[in-house]
Image 1 (cartoon, rainbow, N blue to C red):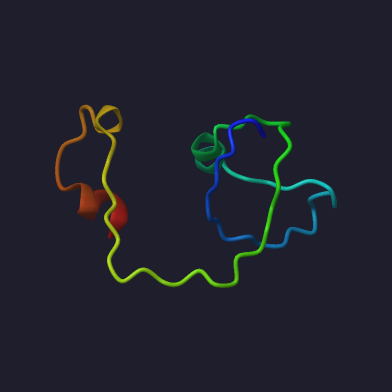
Image 2 (spheres, rainbow, N blue to C red):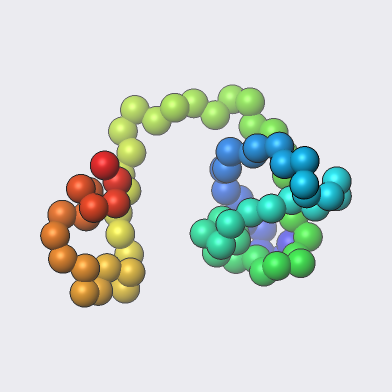
Length: 76
């Protein structure tokens, strides 16, 4: 598209989905800044390596009112 956004996802086969279509969740669509019905390209990335260290940081407006340890609540 015009925005030229990229992301990496895990693709799984789904026999109930028609051939020229794909399914992606709301988070992936948000990351790519696309909407339902938009045209996307899907390419295989065989050389993606596992991360040795990953930083998962919340966005300020997504944790308003959340108390406690976020790691224990959402990532453990």
